[in-house]
Length: 179
Ligand code: RTP
Ligand code: MG
Image: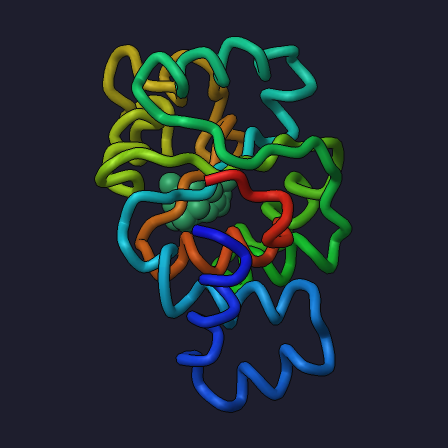
């Protein structure tokens, strides 16, 4: 979708989002534009190769698995989350006993964040990565192959189209997404 089409789509976004977008033209604007259009169609998901897998040098192999499974990488960056970024990203888990450990882990080193395109992207990517606990993950899944524990499990995958849209907007500006 062109920038112009995204702008037109943004006009459909709730007024509060358009108001925010006017003041903060980067991340919030993209959220407003994308949440009402392309990202809701179910062909995009968001992933991170987590610090454990990057540290171990698995980035290339994991990206190869992802593309061999039919996902197109339409955005990608290597970056490091601050503690605050990790707290915000996993805020849904803030009451869980593992939250502190999760925030510490996710901010301890570089990650590779990417937007992936495929029909039925969210569900198919969850199948490709396998269960949260690698001990329970199916043979051939990314977590079975590269994860070491339920906490340090190599990759993240969005769990719904709605969360994929939010997570993509958290990490990428519109000009960084090539779909
Ligand atoms: P993710 O969001 O990272 O793709 O993982 P998920 O959906 O499979 O699992 P979720 O329940 O969303 O948990 C988020 C991440 O928290 C860590 N975790 N640790 N120590 C534990 O019992 C525990 N449980 C979850 C994992 O890094 C998990 O991926
Ligand atoms: Mg999750």
